[in-house]
Length: 358
Ligand SMILES: O=[N+]([O-])c1ccc(O[C@@H]2O[C@H](CO)[C@@H](O[C@@H]3O[C@H](CO)[C@@H](O[C@@H]4O[C@H](CO)[C@@H](O)[C@H](O)[C@H]4O)[C@H](O)[C@H]3O)[C@H](O)[C@H]2O)cc1
Ligand SMILES: [Mg+2]
Image (cartoon, rainbow, N blue to C red; front, side, top):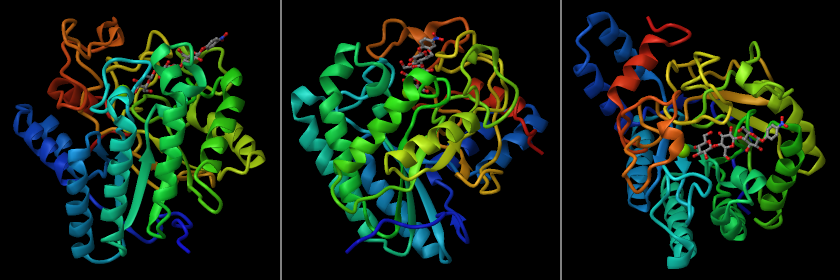
């Protein structure tokens, strides 16, 4: 019987550096004229991020990275994001994906998952940590009023359950995406969220499990610290408060309560005019470096999931995937398409890094 990975996957392991991101940063450094800034930016090449499989065509690349990690020897952790639901990003425009429910997207997604499982099984001695579907289930907690989300709800839940059921190998650790403190952390949302996660895990079948949840993916919140005015009057105004409030609700619902927290762009607080602003927020800085020394037993690791420097969405108002959030006063403009390199934004992230880069 296969059992998913147990314990903290980063313990006693080396985290694999995703070559695609190392290359992006190296190219970025080459385009920085200020020598001090360039030297600071170069240190980012050594910070592990997650590899986003935002199209099915990237799954073979996961296999290449797993093989490279396996060849590197020792105990390696490869970090990746499963992100290809049909009718993806249902409450926003910028990250709509390749699959649609209307056009056979559910079956194509299942093939995508099966292919990921095959890559994992071909590399049994590499630990693989997956963040599962950023924003997906969170949108089902708060955005059923959006037609695209209401129409996608049952499919999202079925497909996340499918992904869990197929990724129970003992070298896999799954963290379902749980939005962030300024989203599901609101008292009105937090209990329905816990129930949603439990429902989806039950849908994966008897014995299936996950390690826990990922928070603040592609967002800007502090792990812990003074309240960001944009979060007021949310009592769970930082990620640790959200996690400490959510954990007992998960336990009551028989859902594992371990967490990872994205801090890649969380170095500077108080930069958003509204808590719900998420697109290339002006003045953001690189945040806490990845570490398992989190100060909270519920949190396995601080991580960088969203690769800092990759855009959240285009500011081109005529583009098919233009979202108005990317045209707001607190959104950096002009901005390129979601997932593509945003050089000036990266340079600001480096400049404003907290802790500062050496
Ligand atoms: O005090 N009150 O009385 C009261 C009343 C009502 C309240 O309502 C809450 O208000 C919150 C703040 O607006 C809302 O949270 C926002 O929801 C958006 C989706 O709808 C999220 O956007 C996603 O962000 C992702 C990256 O994180 C992107 O990748 C993705 O593309 C993008 O779509 C924002 O982060 C998130 O901050 C809650 O839903 C809402 O329930 C709150 C208080
Ligand atoms: Mg997004």
